[in-house]
Length: 512
Image (cartoon, rainbow, N blue to C red; front, side, top):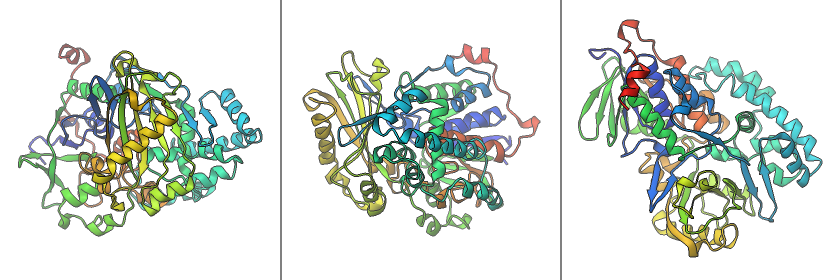
């Protein structure tokens, strides 16, 4: 213990780290957040280029109550910090044959859109969505914010998992209900948003469908970076220090096997009684915790884990507007299963691709100069296990994607580019320090879910905890925010005498 006995360090300032810091502070801990990079946010950081604002990572906000909770925990209102607006349609899915489908929240419109593709699938969908709701009620409402650190916790839910057909893949479950292949794709692409292959990811991830139906899909005015800025502002008001450019080199462990602090890459040491890491556990264990302190998470055991795919993301601004483009567009290529097999299993860079096109200026004109538009387009690609030479491939791949969009969805794009740049798996392994350049941490297979994922409470080091994409319940904004909630059930309780009181709302407001 330090002299105060109540010092906590949070490593990393992604959504999981910021949420963990707020929850720690609400429980009376003295908290310091250490961020390796020059801005907060982790995957949710921001790029500003030539007057355009580009969210670097997550753009789909679901289950907004999880964000509201963080402000309510410390007596604030989220609405006083940033605004959320609904997105309609949730997604527009564009098929290779030229047809399209608008996935919306309103059930009558949704059923009408299904009927337009295949009338028989209306009844099929209603049976499917009843199944998705049942999966959601168990898999999300009962399990998403509960720890799975003991095998008994896994054994307890196995009967429910069998009953819910969790042994089937997401695609396998949907295909057992829906006839039309296009609709099968519409209702199975969501696992890709958390790093999973719909043909390999457990059907328990069908809960994402009902989660979107339950709370909708939202956008934060000012971009996802507005949420990061609001959370960091809130932490500052709560007397939490956020240190940027402070990469951790080592988590120090005392003779009793408990954390004692961290050593930064610049040699500075900081004492701590408790550490919550929002950094990739695969990297934390292999790079920051000495091997002698790791009986379970050895280098060998970590190497056997399957990391998710990576991403190639192109960011670009245009000198013209494309008003007929939806906020979120999924552009599906000529192959579905074959392309995913190339990405996840063969680990090759295919000639074709499927894309996610994000157009935030559809909801928020402030993201681009007047009369301009900003976009990002995301292509799933193999992680760095593939051996792809992105130094040689990146520029050509960017041109392929922009040329495709120019011919199809954004005519005249290349003649109207105001700015453009891209990131590839090197960004995830480098700036974001993710194992194998994975974009979403561990791949969410059944054998890497719940108890089989990295535990939120370390099995090797006392008072070391994890929140983030590779821990339970998994990746995505709701996933990592729920991961921070798991800490409520695993953190040691501070004695009342050691708790640091929160500043009053009025005192915090006077310092803004």
